[in-house]
Amino acid sequence: MTDTLKDAPRTTALAPRAFSLMPQSLGEAKEIAALIANSDFAPKDYKGKPDNVIVALQVGADLGLKPMQALQNIAVINGRPSIYGDAALALVMPALERFLETFEGAEGTDTFTAVCIAKRKGWPDETRRTFSVADAKRANLWGKTGPWTQYTKRMMQFRARGWTLRDVGADLLLGLVLAEEAQDYPPIDGTVMSSEVVQPPKALTVFEQVPDALRDTIEKAFTTLNMTPGARLAKLNEFFGGDGINPEEQATALLEWCRDEYAKRKTGQPRKKGSNVKAKPDGAVPSIASPPPAPAPAGPPPDSPVDQSQPDGEKVLF
Image (cartoon, rainbow, N blue to C red):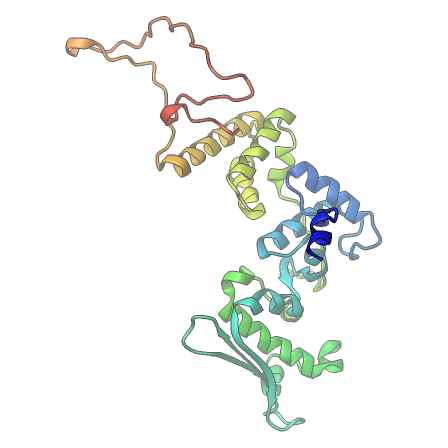
């Protein structure tokens, strides 16, 4: 038996390649958003609206949701993003040691109460939040047309759940409220209480005006710095969100910031800035004029640039 096994041909099983629609650059995001928006799988709020798909994907990525999960579970209600109750529970559940939902009191009375209890890992105490029929009546929700008439217990449960999850997992939900709760908020400035689309940030539109090569370099820098989609968008807003800016100049400034940030992470110090002021011996006043530069020594090939401002000629990745 040993010889048979020894002489048997060996085969290596290849793990199936995971497929994901998560974009790695703005260009990929636009292609994926167009693909989703034109498909029959796109929710109605995103159908034919690729710009809104991009924004939803970014919000979902910050939360840890995959692209299609983000589109199915993030709703923009009254101008603000929110997350459906079951998805919120899925995001917070791994951080919980205990989770319980129940009802107390006599059904059909004002004391009937939805109760949600959660204990986060490492926390000494449990968090207990409730929502009763009396609470619903005070908020003018009891008897309201729609889910509050058809599924009263479920809506009470979502309200208690939402308060509990936001208290124990605010860092995981990033401040989002449950969609089931947001639908009950009063309209702002007369806007319609329904899922509505959002406009893409101005910075993304301006960033598209940057020359392709420079834009690709910035995308590579973001990837090298392991910046999340939310952090990338925040940085683009910082450099491209103003009025009357020059896209190419701002892109160059952003790339310099990326290089400084990379240097600080590698050495703990910002990059050394070159200076044209040369110190002279014997305390002489330095002159602004620089002597002719010495011939450049032989260096690495063009595809492996070296930043001389880095200690020991550290290789620049972007």
